[in-house]
Amino acid sequence: MKVVFCCYLCKKFGNWLSVIGHWNPSPITHHLKPKNMSRDEQLKQRWESVVTILSNKFADGETLDLEGIIYLIGVQELGKIHATFKKDEKVNLMHIAICRLLEPYGYYEFEYFDNDGWPHYKVKEELPPLKAGEQAVLMKEAIVGYFLEKELID
Image 1 (cartoon, rainbow, N blue to C red):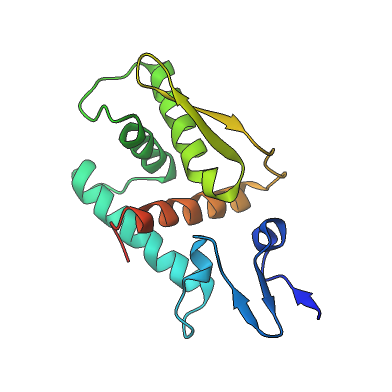
Image 2 (tube, rainbow, N blue to C red):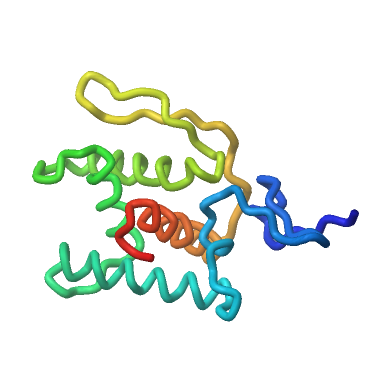
């Protein structure tokens, strides 16, 4: 039987569209699309929902960008919602978010919480070289998956 991969991540992580159908054990969002909507349309719609909800809640109606949303996820994952953070801590929060977001893709694995309550991740596999646009799409897809898991969007 010939296996046809639907995208790079599916090829990398073993999901495939085969002659007998689509096997889907992962939370990657393009596998959750309705049959009548393209993957790009579904991702765009869900991304816009995430941006709207978070912007209204945390940015007084101004539109949050990708980095702002990654920062908010880092704060959420740390669990110190009302804390004030220094510049280096903000960078660490974004790192926490990126690790958490890319964990389902197999790039990172949670290890432990340190004495201050900060989560630590280990690298399981290096990210492949991606162009800036590809990085943005991967992060948006991961963020959408994160908020689907948290049931903020559907």
